[in-house]
Image 1 (cartoon, rainbow, N blue to C red):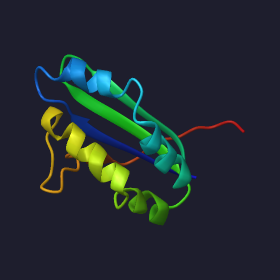
Image 2: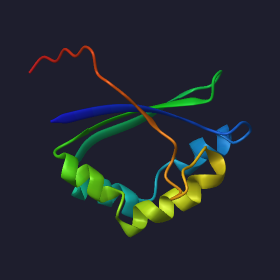
Image 3: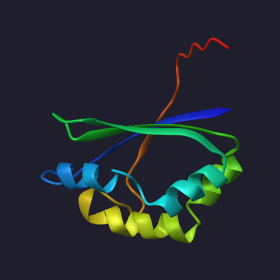
Length: 106
C-alpha cells in the first residue's frame, strides 16, 4: 500500500463552503477514487491557518495519477477552484509531505 500526505489551503472566507462541498463529496467522484485503488482518503482542516492536510492510501502510482485524468476529477477541480489556490489546470496547489515515521500493527 502506498501512503501519501500533502498540504493545501482554503481561501480566507471560503472555509465553510469548502467543508459544505465535502459533506459529502459527489458520489461519482467517490466511485472514481475507489475504482482507481484508493483505500482511504482523509482531509483535515486547521482553522487558524486555513491549511488542509490530506492523507491517502492507494494501490499504485499509475492508478493514483489516472484519477487526475478522469472527467469527474476535472469537474471537481473546476468546482473547487474558487475556494482554494489552484494551478492553471484547476488542480489544487498541493505540497507533498514526505513520510519520516510510520507504525502499524497488523
